[in-house]
Structure formats: C-alpha cells, structure tokens
Amino acid sequence: MEELVKKNICSNCNYSPVDYLYCPNCGQKKLNEKDLRLIVLVGDVMESIFNFDNAFFRTLKLFFLNPGKYVTSYNVGERKKYISPIKWFLIANAIYFLFPYINTFTTSLQIQLNGLIYSDFTRGWIEALISSSELDSQSFHIQYNELTKTLSKVFLLILPLMFSGLTFLTNYSERKNKPLLFHINRSLILFSFLLLVVLCSLPFIYTLFSNSSQIVINDKTITITSFVLLNIYGFFLYKGFFKAGLVKNIARVILLNFAFYILIFTYRFILLLITLGWMLFF
Image 1: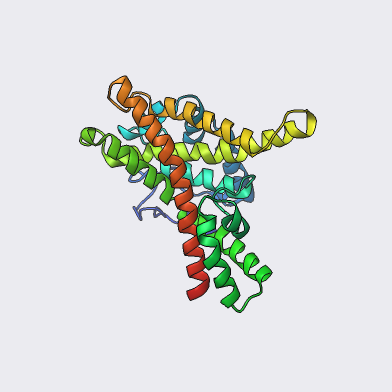
Image 2: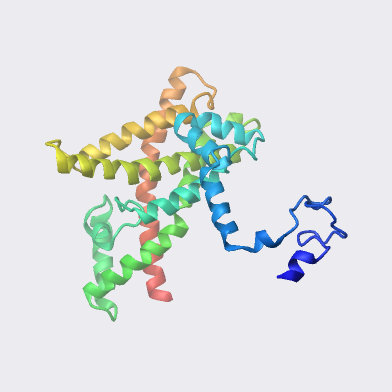
C-alpha cells in the first residue's frame, strides 16, 4: 500500500514525475492513504446516487418529460450530458428481468402452444418434438422455460432494431438528414418505455388497484392502456422527427402501430425457433 501512495508515476498514463495532487498529463488524482480506505467506496456510491447533476438523473428526467429533446440532443452531439440510448435500453432490460410482471418477452412454452395467433400452426410439430425427445413433457417445459429466459435477454435487442428499420423505410426520403442511427436511438427509447412503464410499472399498479378496489383488471384493460400509453409517449418521442403532411403522418402512425404488434409476435416466433434449436443441437 505504501508503494502505491509513494510512487511518483501516474497509474493511469505512466506520466512521471507526478508532484501534484492531480496528474498534469491526464488529470487523474494521485492516490493518498485516505483513498485506500473502505469508506472511500461508500463515498463513491453515495455520490453517484445523490449527485442530481449527473447524466443518469438528467437522462431520467427527459426520458419521462421530454423524450424527443433527449434523443435529439444526443443525436446532434450532446453526448456527455446524457446516457446513450443503448445504455438506457440495457438498464431498462435489467430492471424488466428483475421485475417481470408480464412475460411478453420471456414467453413460456405453454403460451407458445396455446396463447398466440400462430399456436395452431406450431402446436403439432412442437408436441411431436417433445414426444421424440428424451425428456418427459414436464421436464421439457421446465428446460425450455429456463432456456428461453436466458436467450430472450440476448435477442430482445432485435426488436428495436427491426422497428427502427421500419421507421427508417417510412422516412427514407430524409435518410441524409436522418440516418438509420437516429431511428435506432429513438426506437431504443420507445422500447425502454415499453419495458419500464408498460411491462413493469403498469402491471404493478394494476395489481395494487385490483386488490384494493372494484376496478376490473384483465388482459383486455392492460392491452388497451398499454396501447394508449405507447401512442402518447411515441407522439412526444417522434414529434417533429417526421417531416410530412398530416394525412401522410396519420397513415404512418397507423402502419407503425400495426407493424409494432406484428413485430412482437415475430420476435416470439423467432425466440421459439431459437430456443428449440438450441435444445436440439447444444
């Protein structure tokens, strides 16, 4: 420990000699004995949590209150002020998988067999696959459900990429001023809202209300509320992004709403194929 404190070389860039509190070359603080105490770790954690001027809280505020400004500012180069959309999306993913109130993206085999629009088409060959496997039906379901939870964390990223491809195509004439990356960043924030609010917060709030009131809470009410919230949030997120007349923008919204739900089912089907393929070959 004494060697770390007394050495006259910057640990970050190897500049020598370092005769001041901060390295004149890279700006890193020179270690002293206090920096090697455990209390410093606690202080760093507290500072990161309660420093309301940092990028996390600035991003959090605009994410809910003005998402369009957040993404636009980031796209035009204000990078140090905010957390990048991809990092924000990964944070939303982590929270979603800690509190998965709705299993939209970790669809169980039971739902794949009976609860989706393509279930009648896939049920026969899935049941044949189960019968031909070395596992009994219950063990197959358990193994599938555990594996699909893991794989969904990896493949969930394809949804915002697919959706951003659609928004890019509907605005292809503006591709020079609004490249694909701009569409990807907005799509990442839209899906972050879907994960954090629609799939985590909303079901939790519904659960509280259903236990303390006579309000009817079911899949239909959740679906309708989710649809309304996503469209309201999407309006403020994409407001001013698409340059077109009223009729063309209305047509684009209808198309994207329809495509959004098609993408959800497409994602589930892809995840089904990947999970079953993984169980067969690995």
